[in-house]
Length: 421
Image (tube, rainbow, N blue to C red; front, side, top):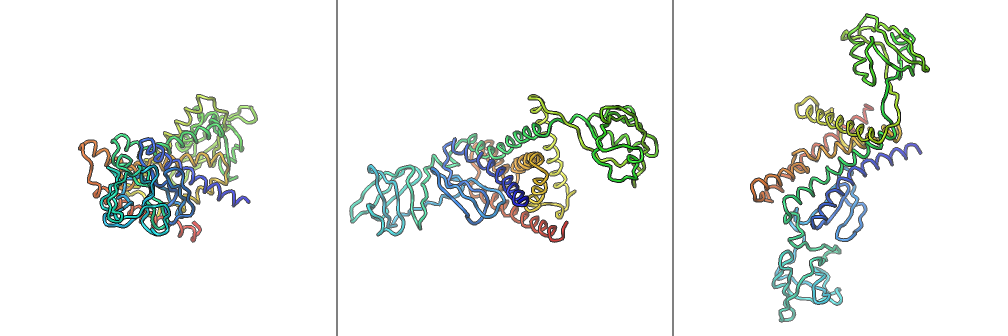
């Protein structure tokens, strides 16, 4: 039962952070009047789908992200050509359905040869019906039906490319923005559950022959001062003071069961010559007030952002080897491990993943949101759009390279699992 719960929580984490990202794209695209053809979670073969309004919602096999497919981003998939024999169904004299195959089975439909057609601007179709030319208007939400699939036409004013620079940029930026909002909300929840750190405690003394054990430090002791310096929750400062006093007595003031006392500990040098006493920390906490919750969540968000950018910088400068990188499998493995620690730690980890997804997607890497925003920015500066074929080619190359990188890191992840690392 524990394993099933862990798996479900792991899947839920990925589902939430990807869905909120894609929902940002979807919501602001709809606000801009763009036709959203598909809202997909995952890539590859379709597992499940349903249609609501104009949009098909799909769940796909490979859980490595998602996408929102907007009309006009790619060459339009609806094609009706002159000389083609089709059938149309009218409602109040306007074409609502266009049939491209199985014409003999289309009841109450008018059959004819296409003389001219415009599905994007003029929204009209001229048919040769038994030698007579009939002109029809096409409804802006008309459906083209072929091979059992229904595809809604997209008038030019419903295309992504027809919208202003600001609306397009917002539709793209909204995905990462929703990840940032989700991360901040989850950090708020985490602070409320975990509380505010207000002291350093002795969390563990792994070696009973260590200086800490020999000086009678005990698990649960509250560290107040080290060599007269108040420590608060700055464990790093405590480490620095101890490291500087190798083989020298260090006076540590503690509180045990509410009673203050001084303990003298002599740190022993490690291989680098830094003093160590053999203590692992934990933290005392208290409930966070309303204002403190927002302040602490903001601080966490800032610290995690700096940490993520430091990691990306190390990746760019080559301080990481390819074997050090983890992909979806490794991320899922870590998420499962954290899920076993409880909902508090899982909430914090989900916030970090959401923040990372938002930042990563804003990188100016082809196929990512950052690259698409870069092209929109160039268009704003040049005051004319980039050649869509060139932009599509750049994004295609970028997507192929990202998929290749994902295959490599996933292969590394699987090897780690096989080796038990």
